[in-house]
Structure formats: structure tokens, C-alpha cells
Image (cartoon, rainbow, N blue to C red; front, top):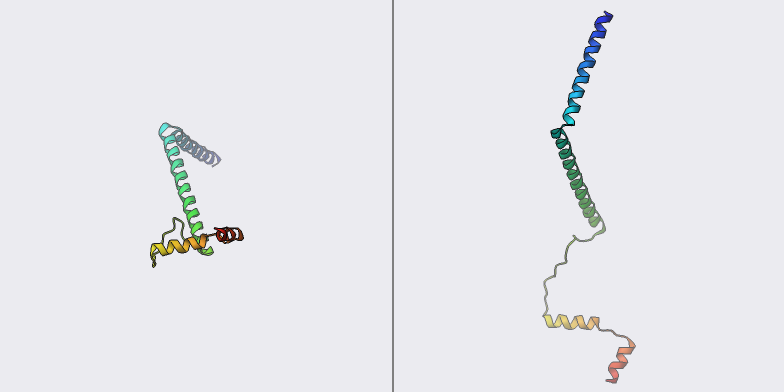
Length: 108
């Protein structure tokens, strides 16, 4: 019985080594290397997309928690008054009101 056991063990080890050798030879062939490189590129692309999606989700969550609006250029609202009135009121708001300008205006 001991000889039969060793024969089966040897045959099993031979089959295992043959399968592993065939897989290694396939992996090191031109097609096998091309497949591995292609899989690595796809994996890197998927990782990059997941990171970008995570960053976008985190930014959206942060903007919601802080109460900030969506990113992008601000849009102008609808005006109710005339353009001249708005320009005049804007100029009045922007005009400096310190002592130097008041003295200068009073002298001219």
C-alpha cells in the first residue's frame, strides 16, 4: 500500500508542476504579457476614475455641509431698475468718503 500511495503522490506532483509550468509559459509569452499590460492599464484607468468620482462626491458633500453654492461662474440676476440708476448707485457706494476727498471737493 505504501508504494501505491507514493505513486499517486508523485503523479499528483507531476500534474501540478506541469500545470504550473504551462501557466508560467503562457504568462511569459508575447500574448500573455500583452494581456497583463492591458489588464494593468484598465486597472489604473478604473482606479483613476474612482478617485475622481470620490473627489467630486467629497466636494459636493463639503459644499452642502458648508452651505456654499455649486462651483462655476456666477450668473447675473434679473434687474428691476434702469441701468443708469444702478450705475449711479454703484458709483455712490464706491466713492471714497474720507476727510481728504471732502476737503478737496469743498475747495473746488
